[in-house]
Image 1 (cartoon, rainbow, N blue to C red):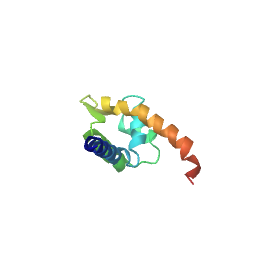
Image 2 (cartoon, rainbow, N blue to C red):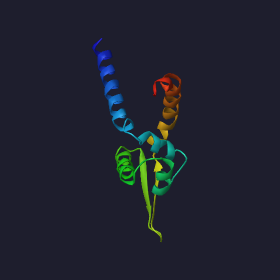
Image 3 (tube, one colour):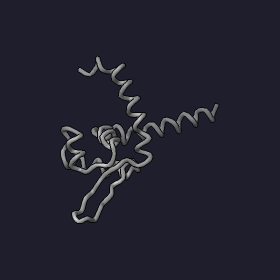
Image 4 (cartoon, rainbow, N blue to C red):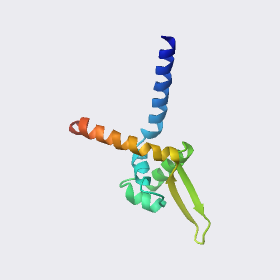
Length: 112
């Protein structure tokens, strides 16, 4: 019984950790937008309507620190910076799709 309790506690800790990153406003939308492939900061800002430059920059840094996004600098000329999902970030795409489907089926009527 103690082993089962330990497994549950580890799972709870993992879910808490996941939502500490994914639960922040905009992070899911940024990951979803990057699912289309590598893109620039400006293209991401257009894809994630309503996000400010400062918040997008902060979120990209957080997602990179979490190992979900990779920032690549091409020295050019001109210098260009692109963002893409890491393998871990790419693995989130089907989970985000499932979460979206679940939310549409179960929470859509409560969104008011």
